[in-house]
Amino acid sequence: MRFNTGLLHAGVQREINGSTLPPVYQTSAFEQDTAADLEKIFENKAPGYCYTRVANPTVTAFENRITKLEGGIASVACASGMAALTNAFLNILRSGDEIVSSASLYGGTIDLFEDLSAFGITTRYVENNNWKEIEDAINEHTRLIFAETIGNPCLDVTDIKKLSQIAHSHGIPLIVDNTTSTPYLIRVLEHGADIVVNSSSKYINGSSNAISGVLTDSGKFKWDKEKYPGLADYVKFGPMAFVAKIRNGLFRNIGACLAPVNAYLNLIGIETLGLRMERECGNAYELAQWIEDTYPDIKVNYPGLKSSPWHDIADGELTNGYGAIFTLRVGSKEKAFKFIDSLTIPYTLSNIGDTKTLVIHPGSTISLHSTEKQKEDAGVFEDLIRVSVGIEDIEDLKEDFANAFNVIKE
Image (tube, rainbow, N blue to C red; front, side):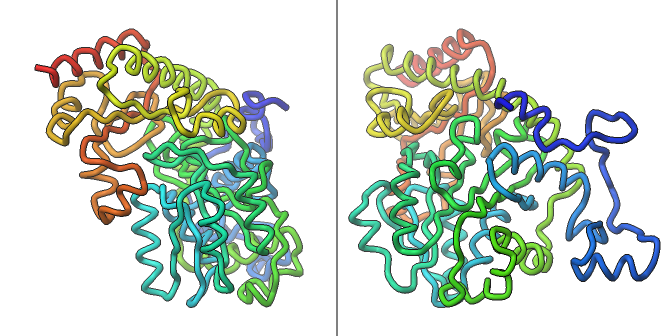
């Protein structure tokens, strides 16, 4: 089943009443015929639903769709992308453990790692794709490697296959945030990643109408009970060990579950993921190339441009495009604000992946709490503007951007 067909049909269980979408099971709990039936569900001895914080049929339908698209064995949907990352990390880590992470990260993830330090979990940041630096950062306490497929907003492209080889040579898993790429551009599990996380609030949803996140397990990593004692009771589940542990513990107990209505909105949005990404990636490429050719004094960063230092990796790893985000450096924070305020089509807000073009000044918003070093490592500068390109007519976007460039030249 090819990609766009899979968006509509993969992992779909047809409804007995003929509905082409699963209903919204807007209920907190589920009745069973007998007390014994409910007991069996609580004991995991029988399939079924008991409480929406644990599982819900609408959410399950969304999880199944994502599992098929990512090529994993199971997914767990959460209340947000940050909740999905938190669950993925804490399902593995305990006090004294360490993470080796690309330094080129979304600011919210850097903030999360800072929060984890209060629980005795250390993050060692390394330059993305710097293999010697990565090897040197790994020690006996390292329990996972983390990176974003395309860094946000640095737009560096991770060599997933090479990074996974390093991780596996040390007996540790690779977790990848694939939010900016989606499985439309790359199925990272097929490139060697062990767990993939998507902030499904973004491209998967596509219309900015639901906050959510989802993690998907490949089922291929062999968990060492000595290195990962928290998984000792679950290795008996084989490939499902990671998901069995998260379902029976952290996910259930923390309670950052996805609301059924948001799962339903995602199911609607995901059907057009391929069509949207095709248009958005095409628009981003054309707009970025036009700016680079027309305004040589403006520094444009986009993996699809030959001027990008990550173009070769992107060319060999990504399919169907280079993503729908590019950045501009316009010379100063004052000019960046003036440029943003002069645009009439894009919305100025802190999201990506909408059908509409979105712009933001990362330094004063999503990376506000990062240190100057963290900002520099993540490609965040005072004059930087991030553009998430939508599905508008490209000529309208060019005209709008041309007007804003004229304003900051005055």
